[in-house]
Length: 119
View 1 (cartoon, helix red, strand yellow):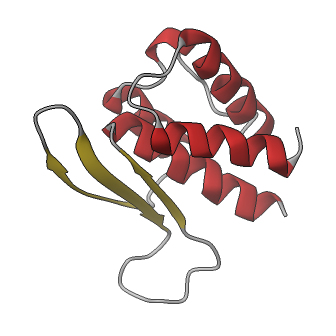
View 2: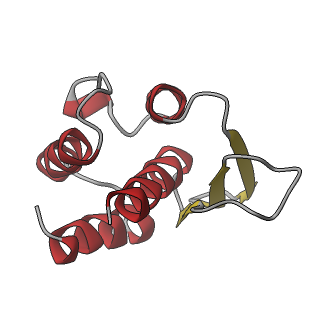
C-alpha cells in the first residue's frame, strides 16, 4: 500500500458517520500492512471503540491514549491522540485522529502513527 491509499482510508475514517464492511476491510488490510504483528478483529467489528482501543494497545503498549470529545444526538466530535510519553513534548511521532465516531478516531490515530513510524 502506498501513502495516498492510506490517506484516503484515514480521510474516510475521519469524515464518515457510517462506514461499510467493505471499507472496514480496506482499513483492516491497511492495518495488516502497517502493523503486521497486531491481531485484528473481523472487519465488521473493527470500528467499535473497544476493538479500536485493543488495536492501539497491542500496537503501542504503554503509550498514552487521550480521548476528547462531545457526544451529540446524531454524532460525536471525537479526537484521539497517541503519545509515547505525555509528560514530555519530545515524542518522535504522535498519532492524531478525529471523527464523528470514537472507534474511527482511534483507528485514524493508530494509522497515522504507524505511517509516521514506517517512513
